[in-house]
Amino acid sequence: MAREYLKKATLTSTSDAADVRDTVQSILDDIEKGGDKAAMEYAAKFDRYDGNVVLTAEEIKAAGALVPDRLKEDIQFAHDNVRRFAEAQKSTLQDIELEVVPGLVAGQKAIPINAAGCYVPGGRYSHIASAIMTVTTARVAGCGSIVVASPPRPKVGIAPAIVYAAHICGADTILALGGVQGVAAMTFGLFDLPKANILVGPGNQFVAEAKRILFGRVGIDMFAGPTDSLILADKSADAEIVAADLVGQAEHGYNSPVWLVTDDRPLADDVMRMVPELIADLPEVNRQNAEAAWRDYAEVILCADREEMAATSDEYAPEHLTVQAEDLDWWRDRLTCYGSLFLGEETTVAFGDKATGTNHVLPTSGAASYTGGLSVHKFMKIVTWQRATREGSRPVAEATARISRLEGMEGHARTADIRLAKYFPGVNFDLSADG
Image 1 (cartoon, rainbow, N blue to C red):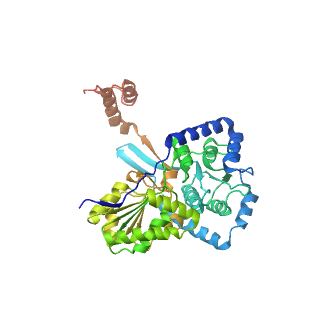
Image 2: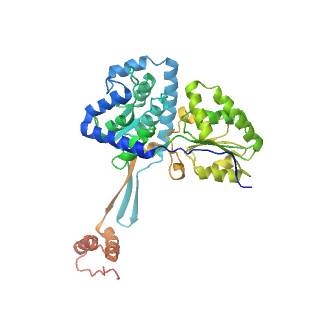
Image 3: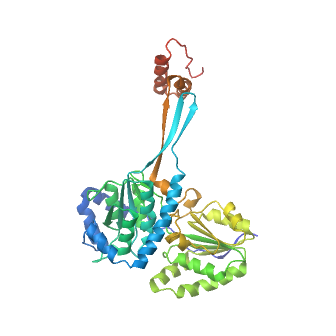
């Protein structure tokens, strides 16, 4: 049978892109022209904050004193897991060299990016885990400068737990700046900081658009939209757990899509009955987000079998993909498009978001069809080098001269000619394009 939509989204996770783009471009232009003063004016306007922008060592220490010991232990636990996973990722990057032909050696070298700018959301929710995920990974990569920007709250400043997490994970500087002004400060090197070479971390549509506009001038982790999650579940799944996991992801925001793909109609019916009940039991701010996300963006799709389920999932290319079904190895081997995969009910997206060690900065809006999430590799430049003896350069020079002439690039060809003439005087080479 063709897949059947038991619940179909009425909206898609797109924003008023043109309006956002114009607003963000205007702010970036103002801050680039006006520097520190302009950034602080926008902080006063949007963050409603007039405190110290660059946190001092004393302010960082004072923030840490406000964090309960149990939470400090949890942050350290998550940091250790993320660090170990990032270290294992880094170990897969090796400098190499290869003698391509006798006398010609080419190589690869992994070089850490010098300056990283990490944005840590702190508006509706205090994203402690985002500080852990971004800063720890940049530090393991070996970045020379790591700056964190996070929105302060009026008359309060950045949430103490975010400050503490950023500090213990290795941030060199913490800025009390949110939104576009925070991104701009890191990019333009305001407040006597190094200009960021890469911007990473989640944020709202204004932060995402700022990163989009600045891409090319700086690197970014990815173009990010609203977070999304898909669950693949068969008849063996626990409907209450499936429903709870959908609700847990829907609370991210009013436009955060959640999808259930199943081949079992009774399970789908049970989940659709339970989700509104679980949403109604949430605190008000969480409930409002989850209600809107479930109403407008959620889908429940009934498929004929697991192959059709897998194909549907790959088509959606979700940021988070959970499998609550039999034969987990089959699903792991079959699925190809996702940001992060959660196999079995014993793990869930929230585990990966907070503490398992895999990174939670992941591709959204179908981008998982062509890219993965944030990793230590994003903070590394893979560059190449080469060296040759004169004999080793001979066959390469001959081939280069002929290929260049065939392409019509005579200047290129002559850089090969001059070397052949110098290194092998008296040798008659046929370097014409049709030679």
